[in-house]
Length: 136
Image (cartoon, rainbow, N blue to C red; front, top):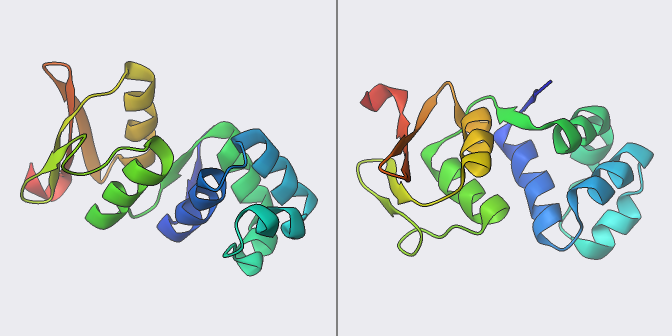
C-alpha cells in the first residue's frame, strides 16, 4: 500500500536519507521517536513533523509514497534528493516538463507512484518524460 504524504514531508524524509541514513534505519528511528539520532545525521530535521507524523512517514519509507500535490520545483528537487539526478546533466526541462531522463524501469515505477496523477511519467525511446497534466 502506498502512503500519500505532502511535498514538505517528502523533502524531510529524503533529506534525512540524503544525509547518510538508509531508508530502513530512518523508518525505524522515526517510528521509535529517536529524533536525536536523526538530528545527528541531519541537523535540520524537523522534530515536529517527525513526531506528529511518525507512523505515516515510517510507513512511507517502507511501503513507498505518493505526493499529494507535487510542484514542478518539487519534482526537480526530489529527482535530485532521492535519485541524484541533476537538471542539465541528467535531464533537461522545457516548459515545466522534464525530458530525457535515463533510468531503469524500477525507478520509473517509483516516479510514477510519487508524482502521478498530477504528472504523467512516460517512457519515450528509453528516456522518461515527466509532464504536468495541464500540459497534456
